[in-house]
Structures are given as structure tokens and as C-alpha cells.
Length: 187
Image (cartoon, rainbow, N blue to C red; front, side, top):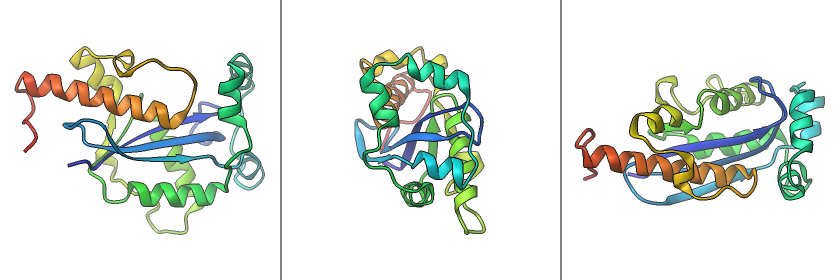
């Protein structure tokens, strides 16, 4: 059943309260093939710094300044920006009642999303996933001998494409585990 979520973000710091440039999330079945649904969000940068006091790191800004013009436009361009609160509400709904939430190098992307969800939500429990459903691709990839290159070539820092590629490699890792009879095959 396609009920897992992969999240990837681009940010301006490496702390949980960092400014989020873009968010990509995809719904997929780790034991299946392909992506079922995609979500791409672009929170307003000024909203995050002025209302929520989210952080920007000079070293991260310097790193971004060395990226391609296409990557810079994708990460920092103004097109499609909306409030952080609106983005988090959309992410909450997209992730609600899913089996697991994944990221590449958990906990960073998930922790940043949890921080932003807590800042913007009036819900008593603003996190749409139980803590025990968070999954880390790096551990799975190491154990199964796959890597991100198995998901295709990276052309830019587009969060939704990164999330999709990571989900596809999770599926390749699960295929190896199923063939080795280490996890049950899909029904």
C-alpha cells in the first residue's frame, strides 16, 4: 500500500529552526514501484525570519552562492511562495495518517519540519506522524548496499525531485530485501 511519505528540504542553516527554502514530499509504497503523489512547497523567507525568527547561517549562504544559477533560482526565487503556516498546514494534511515518514539523513529534514509545524500550528498535537514511524534512508541504503546514484542523476537542489529519487532508491533497497527474503513480499 502506497502510504509512506518521503520528505526533503532545502534550507539556510543546519539547525532545527532554520529558514526553509523549499519542501518536497512524495507518497510512495516502499515495496512497490514509482511515486503516487507529489507535494512541493515554497515558504516565504521573510515570513520565517520576521514572524518566526528562524535562523540563517553565513556558511550555508556562502555554500548556496557557489551553486548554479538554476539551483539558486529554484531554492531562492520568489515564484510560488506562500506563508510558512499555509505550507505547514498543507504538509500536515499530506502526511496525516501515513504508515511512515522518511528522510535522507533523518532526523534533519523531519526535525526541521516538526519545528516548523510546532511554530505554526494551533493543534494540541501539531505533528502528523508518531515519533516511532520516522525512517532514515541512510541506514537502509548502507545495510542493503544501494546509494542515491541508483535513483538517477541529480541536476539541481529541487526538494521534490530529491524526495522522489530517495523514495525510488528506498524501493530498490526493499526489492533487494524481498529477494533475500528478509522482508515479506507485497501482497
